[in-house]
Amino acid sequence: MTSEITKSSSYVLCYTRLPQEELIYSPKLAYSMHLAYSEDGKYFRDLNHNSGVLFAKATENEDGTLNAKSLKNPFIFYMSDGSFGVVAVRTEPYGENDMQSKGKIILFTSLDLLQYKEVGLIDLKTDTYVDDVSCHYHKDKNTYVITWSDENGNYYKNLIVDISELTSASVPEKAKAFVIEPVYAGIEGIVHRNVIRVSQEVVQRLVCRLTVPTNIKIEVPESVCAVSEEELKNVKATAVYSDGTTDTKLIDWDAAGVEWDKPGTYRIKGTVHQDHYVFPVAINRADPCIAKWNGKYYFIATNDADGNHTLYMREADSIPGLINAKEALILDSNTYEGIGGLLWAPEFHVIEDELYLFHGATPGAFFYEESHVMKLRKGGNPMCAADWSRPQRVLKKDGTYLCEAGKTISLDMTNFEVNGEYYAAWSQRQFLPVDQGAWVYIAKVDPKEPWKLITDPVVITKPDYGWANNHVFVDEGPFALFRDGKLFLTFSSALIDSTYVVGLLTADKDSDLLNPESWTKTNYPLLTSRSIPGEYGPGHNAYVIDDNGTVWNTYHARPGVEGPRSSGIRRVHFDIDGYPVLDLPEYKDLNKMLAKVETNVIVK
Image (cartoon, rainbow, N blue to C red; front, side, top):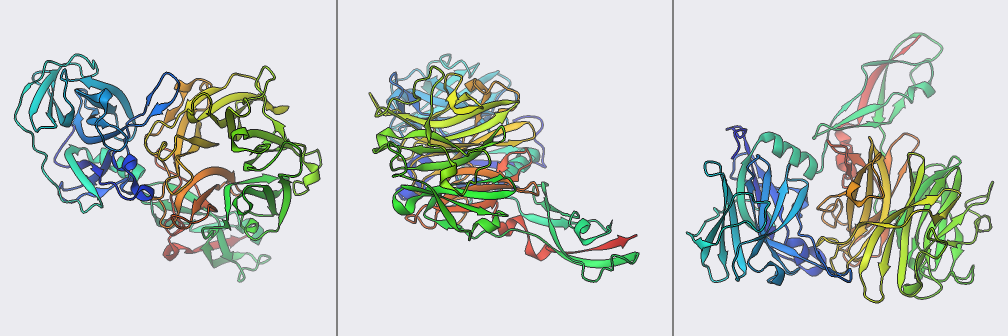
């Protein structure tokens, strides 16, 4: 234990969970490390919606296929430098013994219990399966002591000086059994593990990052100078949240009593404005995307109502206006020869002042699905199908098609600009000779013809965590969001049922985005069925920034475990580290009890 830990410290508990029904909380989710915190070491509160924060990575075969893995009996301890270590027993995805882990335990390290590095398997030099494990660093001996038990309840210990040297452990010797003291947590499904004492700063950051903030205060200026009601609209409120973050919000002012042609001071009232979106905003519409073009907002989505054979678009003067706007047919499976059903995941992208529509299409079967790009003619009307070009299949830099039809598919292609260069990111899945699952790729594109790649594709994420290979090995639906020099690329994983989730990749905007090492993947998903009550299988995000600078997340989820995929809209908040918060519900975003405000208007 480090010298920084004082009597003002707090406590962190790690645990796993009992699996529930496959569509609610499957073993691939339950067999991961969860965290809870306590101020007194007795009563613990769960973090991250009682969902896992640390998952074991899948292993990879020579043919590119993945073997899902899980973990059991995690144990947190302090490393020699004061950072955190976690040892656990790696298992097969549903908790069975993992042959590759026989006689071994898995090691993770972390600076903050938020981001983890999987170091690898520590060889305990035994030919038996490990059932339970603990680890402590003995400062006086400059040695880690790993104590573990086998399946028959026999206990052993190994000594290791440099724990990162995975093969340097001593030969095991008999040891006394270790006991993990039970704690009261009252957390659903908990299989408790050990508790460690940590600084209050560590716990505070965990709480800020792994719980949803709540609006606790609204601040407005005591007085403002204005010469018109139009100028008064520029006076905004600052919403303060429980984690110390803020957001700027519009105010609907009642200025009826102000005489704008008569100097003086007037007391006025107002209501903090909040756009209201009841989920779902569009039933049977998946993969939604909203964009602004020439002063208008446009909405488009995959149409589940007719088996994905049509793409309809909506137009309005504002994002709320899109909810009840009329739809216009832009593309269907009969428009062009070779462009058949499964019209998937349409996205708007403005590239060098031209409007494009990226989407998936196939001449028939699923195994021929490929990314396509349509362009709006100059001066064209986005709501007029005739003003859009024929969809173009995406080409590699050598001029050949991105995918070999019938063997590999591509879909969910997105586009973004960084430092004057344009990139595409998309999901690609090889089916022959073996099904590798869907991976997310990135490449630079020609901005004049954005369906043409100008670099070789590079893989930046594979479905290697249990939440990403739940029911199927899939990473898909990437979309970029920029904030304070960071590039956030959210993506969706698992099957498009109630287990669908949203993951996160992060890169510095000035880094080499074609280098996979530039990207950091968060070990746990940002959005799951546990995030917002009543919304199951959330995913396939796209982002739009409105006229006031507010970032909105468009996504789909299911209103019920077996409900239809349907579109939702929710504001994106940003946490203490500037990372996107996708699970802030309206009632926590704005406390209605604080929404009534007053100020003095000084008319000169």
